[in-house]
Structures are given as C-alpha cells and as structure tokens.
Image (cartoon, rainbow, N blue to C red; front, side, top):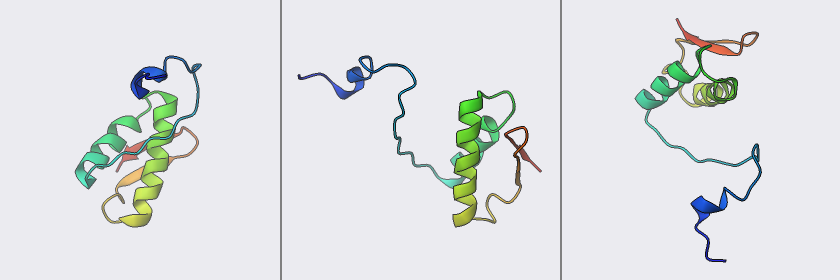
Length: 79
C-alpha cells in the first residue's frame, strides 16, 4: 500500500501491544530508571522501568545495586 511504517500506527486502535528495541549505556539507563521509576511517572512507564531494572541487575548487579524496587507501590528509589 506504500504507507510509511511510522504512519501505519494511525490505523491501529489504541492500546495495541508493540515491541521496542532500545539501547543505552549504563549511565543513560540509570538516568531513565531513576526518572521513570518515580511515583510521579505514569504507571505504565514505571512498570517498564522496573522490568528493565530487573534485567539490568542480572547482567550488571553492582552498577544497579543502589536502586530499590518497592513492589507494593510499583516504584523505584535510589538508596
């Protein structure tokens, strides 16, 4: 149909699941997790930040050991 991929998303209904690929260095991931894990962030992005933190802790535990996940409040805080 010769529609650009970035324009095709307007045809899809809201709340359609999509997959993303992201790359960043540890400093950037710490920044993202620190900001997006706070209670002020939207709930969906907080859940994503928590999942990212869990994955990164498996691969580089010492780099992310100062972040604490509060499962009840679904937030992250830096200790």
